[in-house]
Length: 214
Image (cartoon, rainbow, N blue to C red; front, side):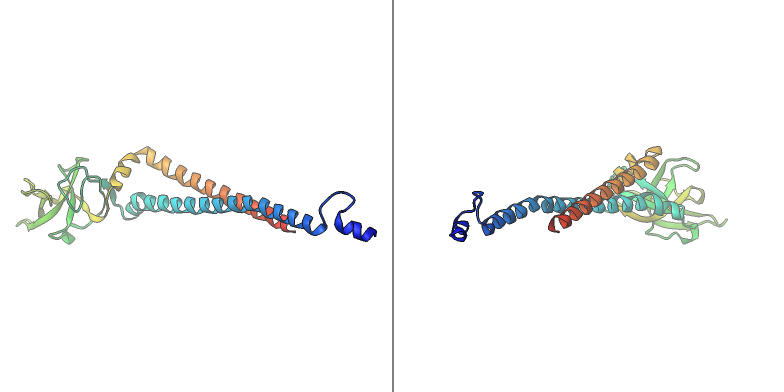
């Protein structure tokens, strides 16, 4: 008789064991969803941070590291004289080139006047060697109808175009001078720290779920 009573309703008024287990199991599954969803967000955050970090490092390499490695210079196209291939805002990186290796068709970066910091990057359309052995270049902007008025002498030559990246020149201008040496390492360090925080949080959440399952 007592066994029959126990099967119908326990003395405590609780549901039978199977029902209680189902409720508890359902509650456990419900409670475990939030950490799982949170972990997914954390993993996505780590992935996004890693992607942004890779982009920042790549930009730093293109704008700073590679030019320094070859003794080159990163410059920003400010006018439309070399459009459409190199419109305003394009980042161009020049590399030192011996005068005797510069050919017609190369994009030449030269000082407007010898010793002047102002430079122009135009395409070589003729190369001339004088009787005294000096090489000069006639240059012209791709988008200009006329050649530049004065020939470029050897002492004015700074280098030739190595590579160019559209629109990145504006970033180069924003990171000019001392701000470049400060902002790039700070941005990279901040992204590293953020990625480490998200990765650590995901590891802690995973460990908590493992303990719950036990």
